[in-house]
Amino acid sequence: MKCILIIGDGMADRPIKELNWKTPLQVATKDAIDELTRRGVCGIMDPISPGIPPGSDTAHLAIFGYDPTKVYNGRGVFEALGAGMKVLLGDVGFRCNFATVDDNMVILDRRAGRNIEGARELGEALNGIKLKDYPDVQVIFEHTTEHRCAMILRGKGLSHKVSDSDPDTAGVRIYDVKSLDDSPEAARTAALLNELTKRFHEILRKHPINFIRKTNGLPQANAVLMRGASTLPHVKPITEIYGIKALAVVPNALVKGIASFVGMDQIAVLGATGTVDTDIVAKAKATIENLSKYDFIFVHVKGSDNASHDGNIQQKIEMIEKIDKLVRYILDHVSLDETIVALTADHTTCLGTREHAGDPVPVVIAGMGVRKDGVKAFSEIDCAHGGLCRIRGADLMPILMNYLGKCQKFGE
Ligand code: ZN
Ligand code: ZN
Image 1 (cartoon, rainbow, N blue to C red):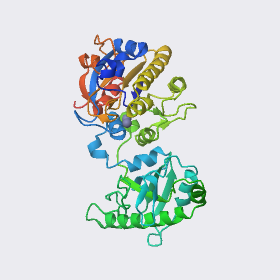
Image 2: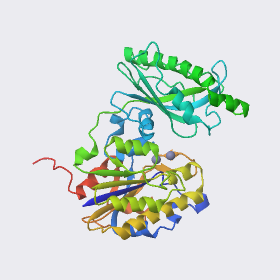
Image 3: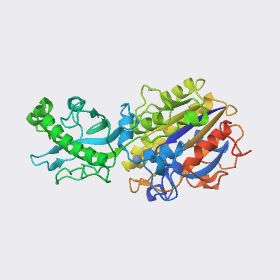
């Protein structure tokens, strides 16, 4: 038995007036998903716990079977993983922004105009710099997308227990980083980060890219804002827990980082973008092509979340219909006698509020051994009548692995 798990990021929603008080899943045309539903067992799932709006990072950790309240101490390290950076245990990771500041370090633009031409070169100028007082600490810096960057500090005596330098608003000075506990490691890391903020500013303000930006009347990318300090938790990868080979078909940086952290191999799929214009059939083909080599394949589609954050109703419906094409291709190419196929969302993202919400998400599991439950359509409302009832995110992996015969017996 094999397993394919498909996650439509932020796919679940609330009923909205514009859709006659239905959800996007209820109005989208999704024959393949509904076929999967008729052939499967359904339920609703609280990714973290009832009412708690999950981030994509904590939701995925939970769905892969971990307790995010125990293993998660911030997003920075996952941002770095997602950027393809190698992260070691003990490294402290950060999410960073290029920003525009004045001579007093007052923030004029938190994103330095957002799309920064030459941002990669600016990132390279900061990567690998050494601070005189911290010769043993490696600074690994990389531009990711638009104004965003990821940073890793590597060395002894560091801590993630430090505050953000990013005030999350313009018009104020970059915050001094402070230690969040009494440890000498946190104090040292905070002092180092404050030193680093100054050095980054010195390097960036003299960088040729910024001269060009000035000539063109663009905001200077002359500072770096840091937030989300975190470290990798010590966890056993799912590949070891269940003795499986696992593959992630995920273009989105953050989710890709989490998938690799829990032990999944990665493949890059041409045309898979992690946005609404992703080539869904290319992803479906890559999944099927690799099924003989893996026990578990995780396919992630990000566009449904993007559309929700943009409040774009039509685009969200179209993304669900794209996911339907993915499910159709999979149903056409696998036998449910040999493969468990599951579909869910990592959280609800409301078109109304354009934010994640703590409502449960629908889930369906189809394949050999599954107790079909008579639910005919895949939606937040229909699946609530299914045989899985209401589960938590961390229940999903054991449920799937049980069908694969990969769960250890508990007791004699
Ligand atoms: Zn998400
Ligand atoms: Zn989101």
